[in-house]
Image: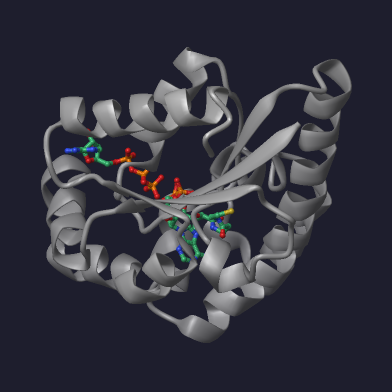
Length: 201
Ligand SMILES: CC(C)(COP(=O)(O)OP(=O)(O)OC[C@H]1O[C@@H](n2cnc3c(N)ncnc32)[C@H](O)[C@@H]1O)[C@@H](O)C(=O)NCCC(=O)NCCS
Ligand SMILES: Nc1ncnc2c1ncn2[C@@H]1O[C@H](COP(=O)(O)OP(=O)(O)OP(=O)(O)O)[C@@H](O)[C@H]1O
């Protein structure tokens, strides 16, 4: 099995790329989804969050109030580090488990690990290829404002909470320019996939 890491800043277009790769035949593991599993109702992760951040971040139905926690951690680096220390080890464990299952079921699989914080958490896996969705910080900020209805202050905080465009470009084997049309992004993904299948990458 080959494992491809797919990273990029918030709103860089990773989801567009990973869903195209999935259509083409890749097996996708999504760290954002795993981070939700890690804090499911009743999980030790959620209990640790309640202990650190208090009942204000727990909704009436006992689930995580993501908006409340988001407004705390994107405004405060120490709080964000504490949250990361609770959630990231479980995400790493779940990712290793999912990738092992994919390898067992299909030794020839091409797996894609969609991992937003690859630079921030350190490249600790032996990836065959690192693909970076590349749209600069200003474009991503505008997308958060216009497509996700974040106010400009919240949008900037999220972008600033992550590695710089330059840091991500430095670890990239392949850059996908996600500043054009969706079709232009998909064409780059199709060409990457053709290279992977043909063994050129
Ligand atoms: C703070 C939380 C509750 C906000 O939830 P919300 O539903 O608004 O956002 P969601 O989880 O969909 O994340 C959206 C994007 O925000 C960015 N982001 C999320 N967490 C972080 C973080 N700790 N540091 C920097 N950027 C982050 C990523 O680009 C991510 O793709 C949530 O993001 C969270 O629990 N984060 C900690 C776990 C984590 O690091 N997840 C991201 C990768 S595993
Ligand atoms: N050329 C493009 N390529 C990819 N996405 C684009 C492009 N042009 C506009 N977009 C839009 O930008 C947004 C990018 O968000 P998307 O959820 O794909 O990013 P993401 O990297 O997965 O973000 P997150 O880190 O928040 O999970 C989407 O709404 C997408 O439709």
